Length: 50
Image (cartoon, rainbow, N blue to C red; front, side):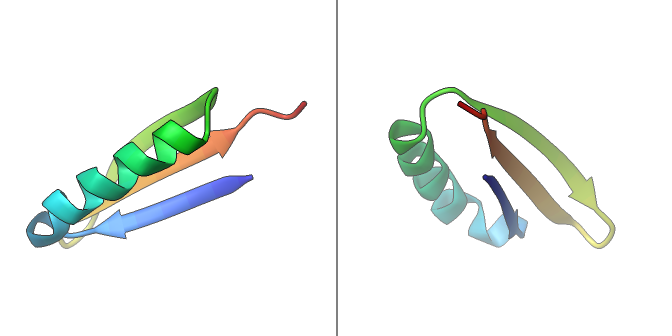
């Protein structure tokens, strides 16, 4: 499963709350983040196949 979250700097506090909940519910996930043009932040979660 892959999850992609995009957020702006103004939405950062909401993003951190949601990210913490996802990491609590999805153990053993890979995390990756990047910044897109226009100041949009992108955060990816990928679960491991069992």
